[in-house]
Amino acid sequence: MTFSLLAAVLTLTGCASATPSGDTAAVAVDNCGHQVRVAEPPRRAVALNQGAAEIMLSLGLADRMAGTATWTDPVLPHLAADNAKVPRLAENYPSFETVLAAEPDFVAASFGAILGKGGVATREQFEQLGVPAYLSPTECAKDTSGGGDGTRTETLTMDAVYTEIRDLARIFGVEDRGEQLVTSLQERMRAVAGAGANARLMFWFANSEAPYLAGCCGAPGIITTTVGARNVFDDTREEWPQINWETVAERDPDVIVLGDLTRRSQTAENAAAKIAFLESHPVTRDLAAVRNKRYVLLSGQAMNPTLRTVDGAEQVAAALRGFGFAR
Image (cartoon, rainbow, N blue to C red; front, side, top):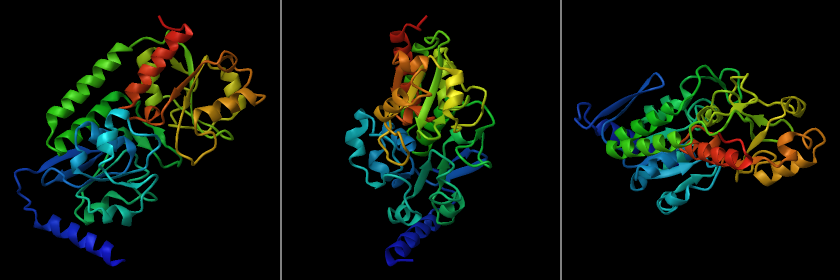
């Protein structure tokens, strides 16, 4: 262990032990069967995923953030100025040492894969050092024992995202801001309800050799249910199963929703690469959606369960209207 890392650990554990257990500012929230307790509102929070970072930034917490990591897209434009004030610890997974060097007093993750074995660290590892660790409720009802992105044991709804916003707002002592944000998102979702006229959609996140396509019950499920459309792969509860192109041809979606990612870890990350593949591959070029160029481009964050899922619902609804599917 380096001197700087040892110093960070000692600082964290020293601060944690110095806080009286009976502090009246203490807050505890139930989080995926785990109690997350903070003795006082965090001052040096680290968001381990972009989703958690954008919620914190939306709550006006940039001055209380010590770092962010694991980004798939540019930050939302209206958050760019605040985001520029927060150190970017890593574009992808940060190391445990890197996070500790930021001297966090709270960490939040959007995915269990990053706050667990094989990720940055487990909750227990953070909490042994006096750092409360919060996991998005969108990950609670999910079975990851089979590997990959996991399987939904319960159908996800926006309520899980609203709970995350409210939990973080409570932890930071900005409950009013949290309610304002939730109310705004709810109003936007109501405005696009039922716009899809039963259009048959397919959601492609990444990878051209063995594409990751959305199953029934994650963020794409929220979008299709809200706008009144249907996912052609709603018969699987896997979050992002890898499905061959021959099966895609059999389902022949009306519209293809494409992840337009800026990261570089899979093949066909951005939408342009996906479209070029679809229009040249012998199995996909005759799909109805491809022949008619019925594509919807979404950020990766809009296809994950985050506050940007609302953006995704709005964009899909607008595209379906443009394609003539709107009611």
